[in-house]
Amino acid sequence: MEELTATKVRLDDDLAELLSTCETNRLARTRDAERKLTELRERASFLERVRAMPGAVATMLEEADAISAQLDKLQRDIRAEQNRLSYADENFAAIERNFLEALLATRVPGIAASDRVRINRRSSISEIWPGGDEKDAYTFYTAGSGGKKTLLTICFALALHRTAALRGMPVPTLLIIDTPLKNITPDINPDIVAAFYQYLYLVAEKDLRDHQIVIIDQLLVEPPPGSALDFTRR
Image (cartoon, rainbow, N blue to C red):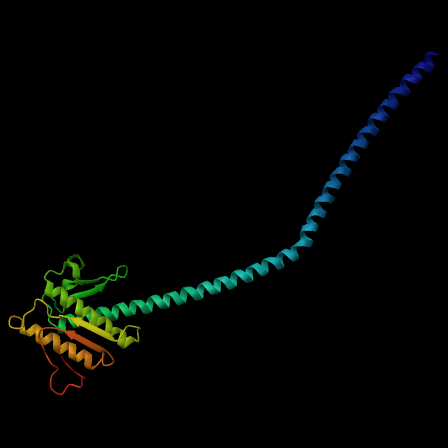
């Protein structure tokens, strides 16, 4: 009995050790199988994503083509707008040149060849910079005397119509000038009166030959002899 009991105890210990080893091995194999299963699932998910990539790439290419078309249109619009702005700036520059030329030709008091005319691009108000100095600039509103203001207004109108005629801009071909020499008397300022009408008839005969110009004034100054103008008065 003692021998059998000792043998049974030894066998029980061996069995317990075998069971422990088997359980350990089973757990190890289970963890290994789960790890492999996880890897396979991840690979399957990756392959699913890879399989969807051609469709995604095609969609992205279509979107890229659409964006490229939009970019091309925007670039064309930008170039067109730049051209319009450039053309508009050329128009402003032409008006500035013609305005200064009219001021000098009509001998507006206080205007010199060294002055500069600048049209504000935001307000479209013309400024005169004495000697080209911006800090001394003045406009129609700060020009001083009423006679000078009138001459500034008429010279600007002539410059505008002349520029429009030369550059093909849509401006009416009827120009009405009411009392151009207001506050400027012929006996005191004969040079200004003569210079103004000389320049007016010169422009009317050349650049504004397709215009109809109506002058309302108390003083009659007719075009010089030999002028090609169709001049009438009443």
